[in-house]
Amino acid sequence: MSSSAADEQMYLRCKRQAQTYFVLANKTDTVYHVKERISAALSGDVSPRKMRLYLTEKSSDALPDSATMADHEITSDACLYVVFRKAGWEDDDDDDGTCWEDVDVVKPDLGE
Image 1: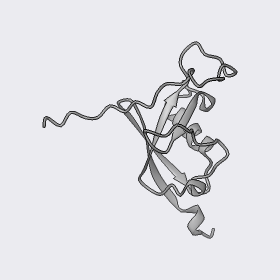
Image 2: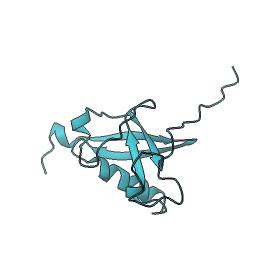
Image 3: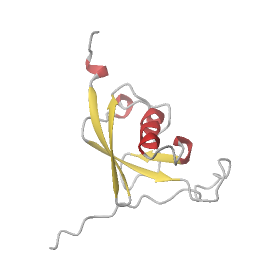
Image 4: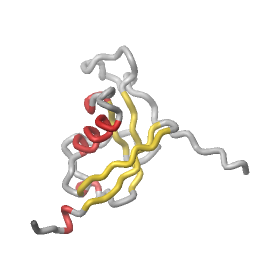
């Protein structure tokens, strides 16, 4: 089996609130594939269709499911931000984006 630079494995840190999911991915993996791995880590409790990934905490645009890690120049040890669809909202209730959580990552209190 040959290995190319595009197929290099990398670890991603996917953060949501006070949680961090460590995901093993390849540069050719799609955003949807990364969401499937997060869903598997949650024992399937949250469907990949009910989560979004963002490049930054301040980003207003979710990464498209069909995009690859390479498309967005995501590299090993990159940090992505995960939000879930709010409880009670259906898949077709997305006209204005209010059905999604805000990106909210809890910063650790380092006693400073």
